[in-house]
Image 1 (cartoon, protein in one colour):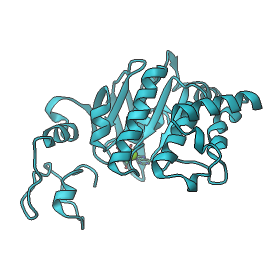
Image 2: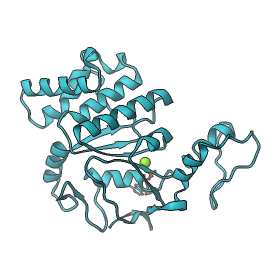
Image 3: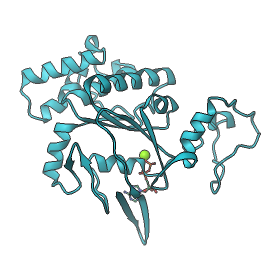
Image 4: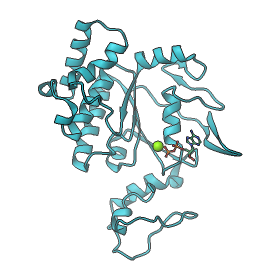
Length: 266
Ligand SMILES: Nc1ncnc2c1ncn2[C@@H]1O[C@H](COP(=O)(O)OP(=O)(O)O)[C@@H](O)[C@H]1O
Ligand SMILES: [Mg+2]
């Protein structure tokens, strides 16, 4: 049961309230919820980059919220891989060198690093691009390099924050399918924040946060919306949408039909 309070001046914000969640080894879980619902806070706590105000966090049986910075750094190296929305590759390094980086940080010798990076690049189908710099690669290829980088140290858990957020929908689907399939074949658990319906559909499980709490059933606004949308043709411009109660209509230049695809992401 995890809670996280932030102080903002005299105000306090409960970014997470009594969140109790457990993810099975090998499971691919999508964490959804509108902007500000607490997704990144939860991911940061799992990454050991932030600590809960109350509650306990375990990864692979190890309690992490009480670990020292040093222990946490060590655990991140041994057990965690990260994939970010904007890929996070170093522009002056080749794909191979980017993928080697976590192994370098973890202190592996040259031979071992090269072997690990080669294998990881092979897993994402980019052996031929090993010597290319990020700017010579497409967005989808860059994210595949980032996935390879996350795999280098054979993590138990990959944390991903909007991994398809900067990809077109076809590429997004292919990239996330790759991540999911690799997680399955390598026995890695994946927790990903997402607004992407394709990611939600490919995940083994979708959990939704609203105002810092896990919501279930029909309270799951985003997930219900995405599921309903399969049988739903967007209304013509000007027609009223069922915006959730208590929220003003977004000030957005894009046409309503387009906006309606992601009403939670304002
Ligand atoms: N460092 C911080 N200081 C103050 N408030 C924060 C901080 N980080 C997040 N929050 C607040 O916590 C809530 C959840 O934020 P966040 O986890 O980033 O949501 P999401 O990733 O779902 O958009 C928001 O109200 C946000 O403003
Ligand atoms: Mg976020």
